[in-house]
Image (cartoon, rainbow, N blue to C red):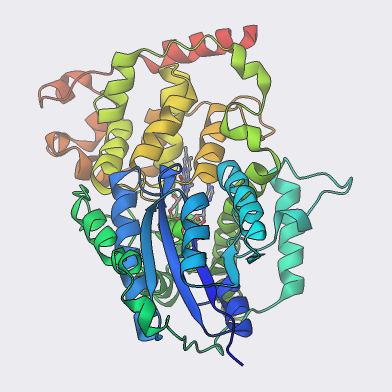
Length: 478
Ligand SMILES: Cc1cc2nc3c(=O)[nH]c(=O)nc-3n(C[C@H](O)[C@H](O)[C@H](O)COP(=O)(O)OP(=O)(O)OC[C@H]3O[C@@H](n4cnc5c(N)ncnc54)[C@H](O)[C@@H]3O)c2cc1C
């Protein structure tokens, strides 16, 4: 008897290895054809040039991998609610498989799609893949979703310890392509040109310097590099210094699913028996904590979809934001006259990526010094970041704006103190602001404005101390 044909829909899982829905599909049948859709209603995946570059190149590699395994990856653009049922019909699929998503738009789209496919007698099989633990499987003591990171971390870590080592090395896929008659089908053959056109239209200038690298192969290498070159053992101290390259650069790979979160977590477990001293142990644990921050924000957005639209703490709706567009443009272009802020924004604009410490500094500066609504910064990041992800970005911005789930009521970063602490020899600042390369570190860190101005660098657009006092008084009123 012929095995049933399956349509496999890749979304935020642009890989073959340890892809939960793909493993499940393969256990049912090897007659699998896959598809990726450039969703016209959901441009989050490619509305930043950097993400379009990451996506396009990851798709190219994924398509080659499907070919090597005897089948194909079709690429279409349009509305998945129309495209998936059409294609399933064309290839006579009996099943459609995909991995579940947590974003509000995707959840609603999938619900609509399931209804339509059911009417066509096509069965949908969905799996959780993007997370360590499904959001519906972890709740606080009173059976509610977590809204504070600390207890979430403790519970999830305990769960991960129970689950133990994860290993998916054994599955070797060999798929069966569509039959010869369908191979001639025009619709199916137009797929190659969709990707070609997409790749041709990419306008990202930072592809050589972006530290995140597209594709499954590159993601594995990034992980290997982080683990084997022992960067993970120094993470606890190195992660805060933007000039040190002390982090993994895996954020875009995790966002697009070119690597499995289980594989990444697994890599930290293999090391636990190998630690040489307390610092090594702490470093592994700190990195795990960051992976759990990722998890936390994904779970939060799943349970509290309203986060996408505004502040978690409603009183922030009453804050009298100034939203000065000129200031916002200065911030956006890295021209505020505050060296650490400008260096970070220039890193973002050039490479599509920014160091985490600097993300916190520039976010605090935009919100607490320039008094722009944090959603303006959230949007700019989504338009630029290679790892731009609704849950992580919204979580990061709400944390920085003090409008999120973080129990600390108000947090204001002093950009000058931050620079002294985390870029003490100004390596990072000077690498992104060449006009300051000749200024002495002490003039730079002590903000000798006249010496900065002599080198064609503008004076600060605002005074941090004055703005901080103003912000606090406005905050007191809400
Ligand atoms: C304002 C703001 C916006 C942010 N926007 C995004 C975003 O759009 N996409 C995104 O992936 N991260 C975002 N972050 C989190 C963090 O800055 C990046 O994940 C990190 O800098 C990526 O570098 P890395 O891969 O080398 O991280 P590593 O330090 O190696 O950490 C490993 C992984 O853990 C996860 N992670 C680390 N820190 C965080 C965090 N604070 N929150 C959530 N996940 C984390 C990421 O998946 C990361 O790849 C944001 C942080 C802030 C403060």
